[in-house]
Image (cartoon, rainbow, N blue to C red; front, side, top):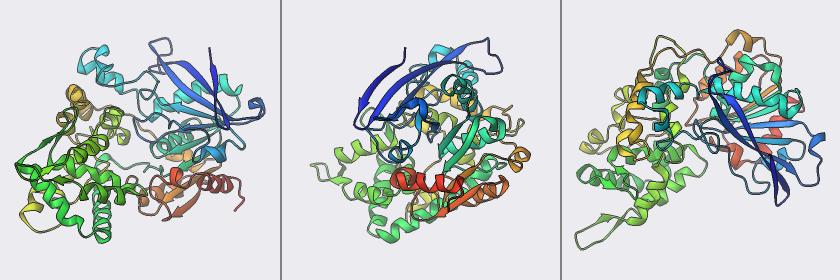
Length: 434
């Protein structure tokens, strides 16, 4: 039974749905989906059109708002909003180190997780839509990976959409995982150099921490092994609006004096643990490269790790042997993640099987997108760390009728930082009001 409750300015209702694990086998195993409906206090939900929100990731459940935060404030003025926990995330049959062993062997776990890409997520949305909307199409708002899902939606089920709104999530329609990361590393280097230009004192601080970790890797609370490489992955902060500032404050308090000499501070290690742990979103690590896989004959084969070898500036050992700045990484997953992080270590063999897997199907239909009739608007961030701007612009030009807002006012989390204004601009674009 659906349950409703209140927060300031909003009425929330829990929904649960049963959908096939494999939509090609509707009579086979089913899994449960969870979604939270939000309606402005005082509005009659039956008079409002639906807006489906697809969170970024992969691997993140829908954001848990309190009241009418961020873009939700604008959406609730005219929509009945469904915040969907995509399969395997949040309260939707979670997939993690504790639950996946229920599937059996690593081979069975990998086979199970092959059904957790954008194609299955969109089919989930189409499976639950008729029961919620009475068969009417709805508007979809896709953030980051949610935008990848929305692009797949436009490719395979445009009849389910009134409009599509994409924030920082227009994928390349054809790029392989190798091509995605070949574009990513130069972008990461630019973000690093911009950070060090803002905070030149961080050059020595980052080098000192990395040198310390090369000699003495640290153990974070919970058992996470902090190596120089793991420390470098804090660069994922550099893709958010205030991430450079967060990184600076983290680095300035790294060491404390002890009787045995300088040591990494407990407070530093505690904060790093919260930033690096995949305990809350293991699917991000397990499925990050498969979201780019479209060639049935080609495995992703740890693309980020292989491509990194061609960018020696990201090699901590070589950097410390010279006098250059340490380059942080971000938005890349490597084999060592599955030995360093206790939340991932039991899934190491499953990750290897996914990296070696072939038979992935295509996710986008360029011909259908070129004939698109659904109103679509996308915000593209000018130097997005996580999604290549050139790829996004090329895709925007490939989708008939898509209108873009290209801006350097926000980083990748602009829909959160910009809140109502970002959503208002996208709605104006799809309605041809600007």
